[in-house]
Image (cartoon, rainbow, N blue to C red):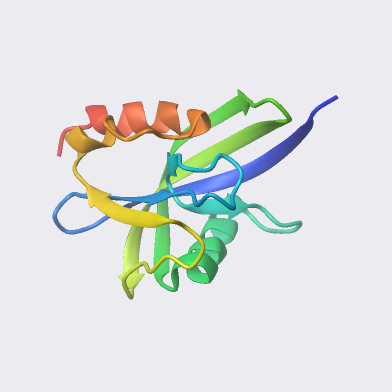
Length: 132
Protein backbone atom coordinates (compact mmCIF):
# COMPACT_ATOMS: atom_id res chain seq x y z
CA UNK A 1 0.00 0.00 0.00
CA UNK A 2 1.23 3.46 -0.87
CA UNK A 3 2.01 5.94 1.84
CA UNK A 4 -0.18 9.03 2.02
CA UNK A 5 1.59 12.32 2.66
CA UNK A 6 -0.43 15.28 3.97
CA UNK A 7 0.93 18.61 2.74
CA UNK A 8 -0.16 22.23 2.56
CA UNK A 9 0.39 24.93 -0.03
CA UNK A 10 0.07 28.72 0.15
CA UNK A 11 -1.49 30.84 -2.55
CA UNK A 12 0.26 34.08 -1.62
CA UNK A 13 -1.06 37.15 -3.38
CA UNK A 14 0.59 40.56 -3.54
CA UNK A 15 -0.97 44.02 -3.82
CA UNK A 16 -0.91 43.76 -7.64
CA UNK A 17 -3.10 40.61 -7.49
CA UNK A 18 -0.14 38.46 -8.57
CA UNK A 19 0.34 34.96 -7.16
CA UNK A 20 3.69 33.67 -5.83
CA UNK A 21 4.87 30.44 -7.51
CA UNK A 22 7.98 28.34 -6.87
CA UNK A 23 9.84 26.02 -9.26
CA UNK A 24 11.01 22.76 -7.70
CA UNK A 25 14.76 22.21 -8.08
CA UNK A 26 16.39 19.18 -9.67
CA UNK A 27 17.25 17.83 -6.16
CA UNK A 28 13.57 17.72 -5.15
CA UNK A 29 10.94 15.12 -5.97
CA UNK A 30 8.72 16.33 -8.81
CA UNK A 31 11.69 18.33 -10.10
CA UNK A 32 11.03 21.19 -12.51
CA UNK A 33 7.34 21.45 -11.68
CA UNK A 34 5.88 24.72 -10.44
CA UNK A 35 3.97 24.68 -7.16
CA UNK A 36 2.32 26.80 -4.54
CA UNK A 37 4.97 26.78 -1.79
CA UNK A 38 4.40 24.85 1.42
CA UNK A 39 5.31 21.47 2.87
CA UNK A 40 4.46 18.61 5.18
CA UNK A 41 2.27 18.95 8.24
CA UNK A 42 4.15 17.87 11.38
CA UNK A 43 2.51 15.94 14.22
CA UNK A 44 0.42 18.24 16.40
CA UNK A 45 0.23 21.05 13.84
CA UNK A 46 -2.88 22.41 12.18
CA UNK A 47 -2.60 22.89 8.40
CA UNK A 48 -2.48 26.65 8.97
CA UNK A 49 0.37 26.37 11.51
CA UNK A 50 2.31 24.07 9.19
CA UNK A 51 1.94 26.50 6.32
CA UNK A 52 3.14 29.48 8.34
CA UNK A 53 6.14 27.48 9.59
CA UNK A 54 7.08 26.08 6.16
CA UNK A 55 6.93 29.47 4.45
CA UNK A 56 9.03 31.01 7.21
CA UNK A 57 11.63 28.18 6.97
CA UNK A 58 11.82 27.92 3.16
CA UNK A 59 11.18 31.51 2.08
CA UNK A 60 12.22 33.65 5.08
CA UNK A 61 8.99 35.64 5.26
CA UNK A 62 5.85 35.72 7.39
CA UNK A 63 2.38 34.96 6.04
CA UNK A 64 -1.11 35.06 7.46
CA UNK A 65 -3.17 32.06 6.34
CA UNK A 66 -6.66 32.84 5.11
CA UNK A 67 -9.45 30.81 3.48
CA UNK A 68 -9.01 27.23 2.25
CA UNK A 69 -9.12 26.99 -1.55
CA UNK A 70 -8.84 23.29 -2.33
CA UNK A 71 -8.33 19.87 -0.74
CA UNK A 72 -6.94 17.46 -3.34
CA UNK A 73 -5.73 13.87 -3.27
CA UNK A 74 -3.40 12.86 -6.07
CA UNK A 75 -1.82 9.46 -6.58
CA UNK A 76 1.75 9.69 -7.84
CA UNK A 77 3.87 6.68 -8.78
CA UNK A 78 5.23 6.06 -5.27
CA UNK A 79 3.02 8.05 -2.94
CA UNK A 80 -0.45 9.49 -2.47
CA UNK A 81 -0.42 13.21 -1.73
CA UNK A 82 -3.21 15.04 0.05
CA UNK A 83 -2.69 18.72 -0.64
CA UNK A 84 -4.66 21.42 1.14
CA UNK A 85 -4.19 24.85 -0.39
CA UNK A 86 -4.98 28.11 1.37
CA UNK A 87 -4.97 31.73 0.38
CA UNK A 88 -2.36 33.67 2.30
CA UNK A 89 -1.28 37.25 2.77
CA UNK A 90 2.33 38.36 3.10
CA UNK A 91 2.66 40.23 6.40
CA UNK A 92 6.44 40.59 6.75
CA UNK A 93 9.36 40.34 4.32
CA UNK A 94 9.54 39.22 0.70
CA UNK A 95 9.74 35.50 -0.11
CA UNK A 96 13.30 34.41 -0.89
CA UNK A 97 13.86 30.85 -2.11
CA UNK A 98 16.44 28.70 -0.32
CA UNK A 99 15.63 25.29 -1.87
CA UNK A 100 13.67 26.06 -5.04
CA UNK A 101 15.26 26.63 -8.47
CA UNK A 102 13.24 29.78 -9.19
CA UNK A 103 10.27 31.82 -8.02
CA UNK A 104 8.02 34.33 -9.69
CA UNK A 105 4.92 36.43 -9.23
CA UNK A 106 2.37 35.77 -11.96
CA UNK A 107 -1.09 37.02 -12.88
CA UNK A 108 -4.10 34.70 -12.81
CA UNK A 109 -3.95 34.55 -16.62
CA UNK A 110 -0.31 33.44 -16.52
CA UNK A 111 -0.92 30.76 -13.85
CA UNK A 112 -2.36 28.24 -16.29
CA UNK A 113 0.67 28.59 -18.58
CA UNK A 114 3.07 27.21 -15.94
CA UNK A 115 3.73 23.48 -15.66
CA UNK A 116 2.32 22.84 -12.18
CA UNK A 117 2.69 19.61 -10.21
CA UNK A 118 -0.47 17.51 -10.76
CA UNK A 119 -1.70 17.85 -7.15
CA UNK A 120 -1.62 21.66 -7.50
CA UNK A 121 -3.68 21.76 -10.72
CA UNK A 122 -7.21 21.84 -9.18
CA UNK A 123 -6.22 24.85 -7.04
CA UNK A 124 -4.55 26.53 -10.04
CA UNK A 125 -7.73 26.10 -12.07
CA UNK A 126 -9.92 27.45 -9.28
CA UNK A 127 -7.71 30.50 -8.64
CA UNK A 128 -7.30 31.25 -12.36
CA UNK A 129 -11.10 31.50 -12.74
CA UNK A 130 -11.51 33.98 -9.88
CA UNK A 131 -12.41 37.55 -10.66
CA UNK A 132 -10.23 40.18 -9.08
